[in-house]
View 1 (tube, rainbow, N blue to C red):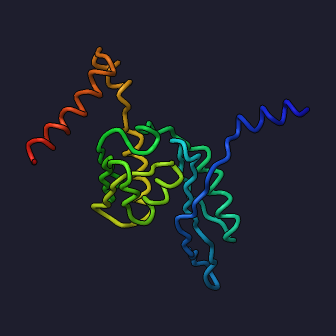
View 2: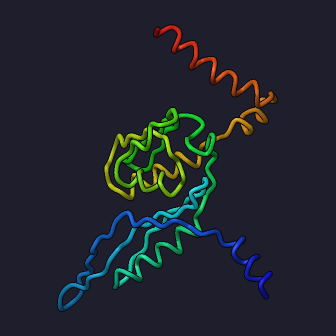
Length: 185
């Protein structure tokens, strides 16, 4: 019995949940308005996995619960460099929402606004610079961030696609940044 509990704990990792926003929505019916609530939630394990969900309900706790369940079903894995930042700069777009995500050196911290900050906190990213270029609607920003992170590739995937060694791909990245630093100084 104790073994079954341990196996179940391994299968269901503990997720960090962040409530990004709650909106009051109204449905106009004969005789007045019916109010409900819409919740936007992001979840992650702090080790490179995250998902998001949004749901509506008549009560706030029900909306949050439904959104959290949906977020847990939509979890994706994002490759992180050294477990603290992303491997390369990437852009994401959803409707009018556009985001730019840039890797950052150690000690930079999370430089991002509102909904994107919540995503990076649950993802486990410690150093990143992010900019929302288009719409500042939380739904658009989360969707655009999700699309950008979904398109991330780690050096192993790039090396396999090009038929090279990982060492060649990573060394090119460090030398190109090193040359830029030398030419500036």
